[in-house]
Image 1 (spheres, one colour):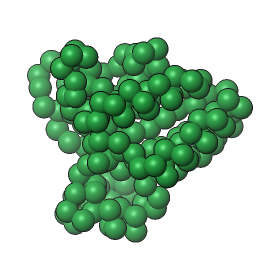
Image 2 (spheres, helix red, strand yellow):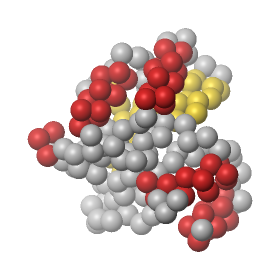
Image 3 (cartoon, rainbow, N blue to C red):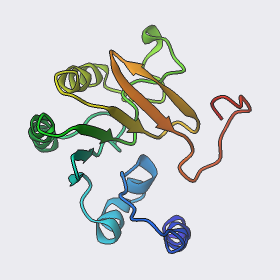
Length: 165
């Protein structure tokens, strides 16, 4: 509850809408019920103008359940009718600090699922994948799809390299 209280106080200062993506700390310690009661669905999408925003829940650090995967495929199919599509997830598909031979890093633990979901996303016009989980800032390409890992998301940065932390 303390982490939620602090975060909710910070949200009151925002002048813009906030669309959360659940993370592993949000669901820990029976936090799923609390998250749902405060923020609503664990995965969802919305549009703004000609842009589709898709938020998925991979906070278990492994995969997404079959129902969410079916929903995600449907949302990706819709993406073909929008000018821009952005996908948000907490846990990155792969850890950019690790070579492919050293995966998983601080990323999806089920490597078969990581490949499967990335292969699925490569079939659609995704402008950017945004992820968190790693307490640093990284950007690059996952098999042609641009990604940005957004940093600490409220937590401290954990290393001293100014390019990433």
